[in-house]
Length: 92
Image (cartoon, rainbow, N blue to C red; front, side, top):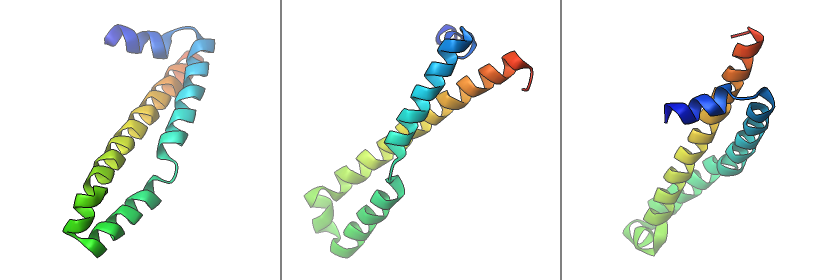
């Protein structure tokens, strides 16, 4: 695992830069409107209670939590690429 992260963050600068852009895009896609969806899910469950949970409210909540953690993982990978590039320039 350490080898993979070292290759991602400290490999050729052009590859790290491309990966940084890809991770930024994936972070944007996975986090888009996440707060609004959490709010709507909370309102749905708080309004309809157990019936909302049986109709998929709990499943949707779990999916939103997974999406949030996936978004966080992409953000961490983005920051790792950023710090790897900044370390090459001597700014970090």
